[in-house]
Image (cartoon, rainbow, N blue to C red; front, side, top):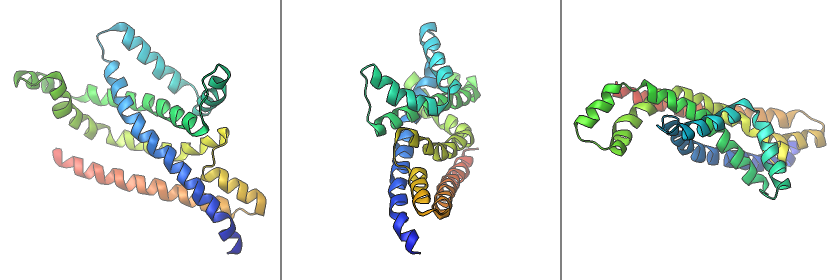
Length: 213
């Protein structure tokens, strides 16, 4: 118990960093993913080509490598980031690419008749998107979106590579210092709790969205 009180504050401090990266990624990647999914349907070839290239790079290279490149690589060419800024930027652009594909699939699932009906009713493109299309897309993509959110909880552990003190790094330091596996057990329990909370919230959202059927 004495050992636990010694390393628990460090793990809880790391939990704050983990949650900070998690929430800022959700806040930043969702709107960016929506914009990217819309850009993929742009009538302009150049825009589609650029967005598809961005998504290909983000999905085709490891997030760990992207973190290293953004924090260390960009600093070498005069574009420095703080550790937290680098982590937030890397996670946002990475997850936005995955969410863009999810939202694109959702957009393609909306029947063309919905667009035609909105046009007949005199709705503008903006009104059609926010009032007709987006609510249906949200309902369609919730399960896939939930999988990405659960992955995000676990992927936050990668920020250790640029020296940020997340819960896994705090647990590793405590385990090495006290020669015990207890910190790792606590870290594992915290990850399980976070993923459980996310899963419960997403399933509740799915049930509420099912009333639209």
